[in-house]
Length: 131
Image (cartoon, rainbow, N blue to C red; front, top):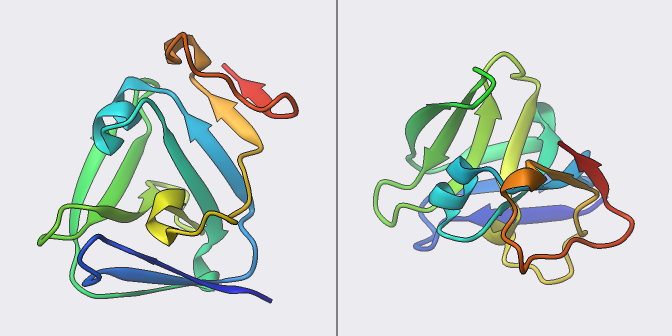
């Protein structure tokens, strides 16, 4: 079983995970674009019991287009998001794939909100497309 470490830019806030992600997804929604400063967010979902967090984080809760809420935890020093939870789905923890800084991390299997995808972005051929 693999152990991976995700951290913020300054290293103060971390999440250590055991095992493989349940799902790796790409989200093209405008909120993820703003949150990441990129044209999409890429996140890995793990069972809550597989994640151990350390450090001090601040929370920001965002309400999505469909009314669901997501609670993002970010470092108060450098501002990087290290993990998040969908409110009401507390059995899972999402971690931005970039927080692992691991080029060999498994690629995404799901792409969502593609109607907001930038025209020059292409997804892998085998990826599942959800709205």
